[in-house]
Structures are given as structure tokens and as C-alpha cells.
Length: 141
Image 1 (cartoon, one colour):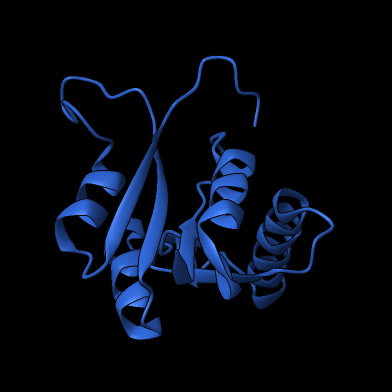
Image 2 (cartoon, rainbow, N blue to C red):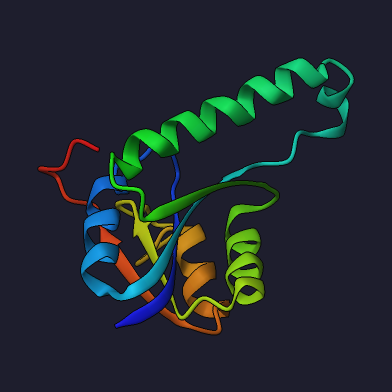
């Protein structure tokens, strides 16, 4: 059983509901679930065209998508971060004192071999337990 579980979500991939169900089974009674999405940093040349309003819309859209995946239970917090996903999640989990990260892994290509690059980075550098969910061909979200 874990007291603090971090679930990084790639909102364009489908591990959210499975990861939440697993986290709810693995957390202690008073445990905390933190669902995080990392928005890649905007390249310098594109920042010129990005207004603060656009950035706020992107952040709010990510929060809304996370809230949908968390569901109606109020046992998880949502956080939106910016940076390189693997590194940002690992740094965040270490900073928050997480004792487990539940991360999804897509079907890898030759480049990724066994794990997706984000999942591989998290497994390699996290200071806590990491549970990797493989893509489920029957899962929709």
C-alpha cells in the first residue's frame, strides 16, 4: 500500500481510467493520488506567437481532461506541469515524496524497444516504486 501515488497522464493516450482504478486499489486509506500532465515547453520561435490567453486555454483544457479521467470521486488532485515529460514527472514525484508512480507505456517501436521513452526515463530515474501499465488493445481511454 502506498501513501502518495503520482499518475502521469499523456492525455492523447488511453491509460487514465486503468491507472486511476489501480491507484485506488494500491493507496492507503488516507493516501493521496496526484494526477499530472506535462505540457512540453513551447519552442522559442513559437513563443512569440503564443499569447498568455492561449497558454491559459491550453492549461485549462488539460485540467478539464484530467478531471474527466479522475471521475466523480474526490480522492485525487490534478496538476499541470511544463517541461520534458519523463524528467519533469520524475523530478516532481521526487520533490513530492511519492512512494509510487503509475505510468502507462504505449506499444513501443524499435526506437523505444521495450518501454516508451517517457516510461523508460521514469523507471530509470524515479526514487520510488514504478508500476508500468502496458497498452491494452481493449481499452478505449
